[in-house]
Length: 69
Image 1 (cartoon, rainbow, N blue to C red):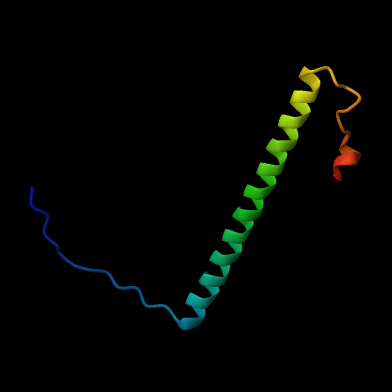
Image 2 (image 1 turned 180 degrees about the vertical axis):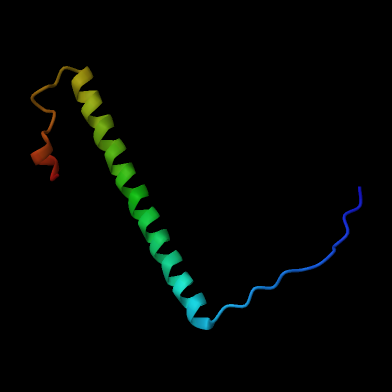
């Protein structure tokens, strides 16, 4: 099957639009990175808590106020 290029589409945007979109993309990337980090910390917390509970070390299981929530 041969694909033939029939046409092209060009989109023109002002420099301000490009800079605004770039800024928004940077903010979204930072937000995603922050969420990734928060998820990692939460999974570590849950793993630690689960291990302590499975070992019946109830007194060593930290409370939410010790966690800094």
